[in-house]
Image (cartoon, rainbow, N blue to C red; front, top):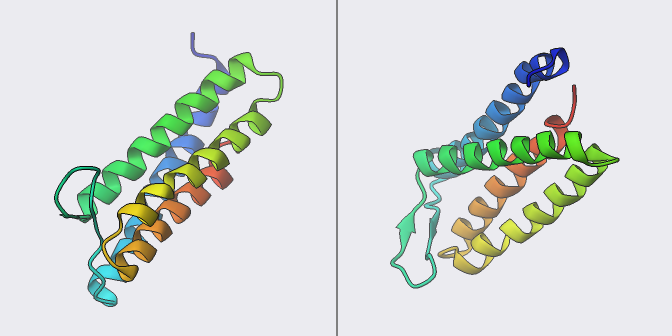
Length: 131
């Protein structure tokens, strides 16, 4: 069931997700075309894969939509939904850094990948729960 409150938060939350995607892409643009870094990672048991703008946008979009869904559930079920969501979001952000720190190919790639995670996560943590 959609309420007036749900409809009023839709533009702000969609904007927060879009801002996270754009922020991660901005890091990619700064690192790759401007600074010449080549972000690449080695997935578990796989070959080296370059991380391009489509992967950056898709990953940020999935993270943002997942965070939004979790926040919506917590708002309906938790006593302190924003506090709970923020705690979970910070834990997920910290855990997400394992991937670039262990799978980044070279220091420039590791820093670039970690920066994209931190920037997208930071934007989502700051903007998603606001009304």
